[in-house]
Picture 1 (cartoon, rainbow, N blue to C red):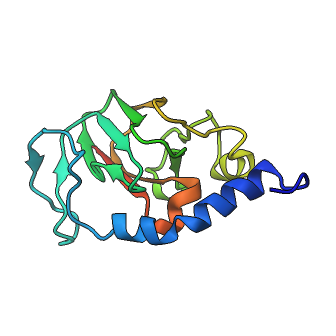
Picture 2 (picture 1 turned 30 degrees about the horizontal axis):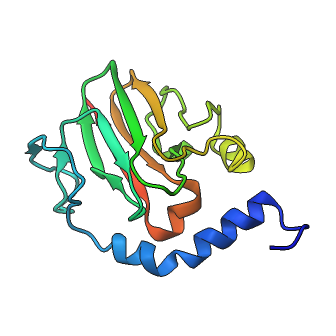
Length: 160
């Protein structure tokens, strides 16, 4: 590694070497790391994926949120925990959250652009780390991991 390689370039280089691993880990199905909560039936437009009633989401070395789709009641605090050795982020798609809902991103940012600009210096959840957000507004939220979005690391929260 040369002296002029920045931390950001290093992270991008690491992420690009994991593309094959990430694609293999994102081929669908359920993760063996999924919580034991019973899934609810889905009504997500016929996608065939179920919503799990849990308030804990794991981020793993297979570059996935497990479970991918969760359902919680308004006022619930959701905890994301990095159970792997690779750093991740939790970053809401600003245009894919309900009107009037509070924006959320690991690092405490107020916008998606700010979260992306600051990563990995801020907002990176390392091995064993957690991030929490309390969902007050009902509706569906979509979020992703900044360095692993291209590998399909996207998750969903439905608040009822």
